[in-house]
Image (cartoon, rainbow over the protein chains, first blue to last red):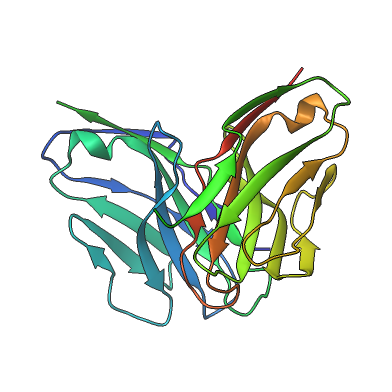
Amino acid sequence: AQTVTQSQPEMSVQEAETVTLSCTYDTSESDYYLFWYKQPPSRQMILVIRQEAYKQQNATENRFSVNFQKAAKSFSLKISDSQLGDAAMYFCAYRLPSSNTGKLIFGQGTTLQVKP
Amino acid sequence: NAGVTQTPKFQVLKTGQSMTLQCAQDMNHEYMSWYRQDPGMGLRLIHYSVGAGITDQGEVPNGYNVSRSTTEDFPLRLLSAAPSQTSVYFCASSPDGRRGYGYTFGSGTRLTVV
């Protein structure tokens, strides 16, 4: 069964600095999608970044980038130049394209605190 | 604004009561789903639908029913509320269930069963 693990329940970073959130997953599939979602105190789930497993190039969205290590089954999120608005819970998620359930499998989440 | 609309945002139920959580999207997405979020467990899939008239169970379906009579609407029914159903519920949609599109989430419903 596919699982997603976020081993850091909480992280903190100084404003303007860089932080990396860890995510590992377990799968026997070769084709899949990985996501990072942000959940601020408003509770809204916001898609931060998306990675396709067959692409070797790491995805980047402005200050957010990933380090995708397919062999190690690792998918970490790097936030550069951290801002106070980045404070939120971050979820890593995995999705199989071949399954019609469209099911997203989520990790337990990492709460990020940004210190001014 | 286009997106996924969930109502209500908050609800308190007594054990044994029934209710329906509403979800509507205006993006013509074929795929819709319901998740529940519990502390330390991430989000877990309750039910999903790949199109109007088609629904199926997810990971934690017991105690919940769904129907999909239109593309836009996907209500979640709690048949007889139990304290174990205290949770935050999210509706999410995607253009389809197969390719790697991200989901658009509603703003969630915080449900407390006493």
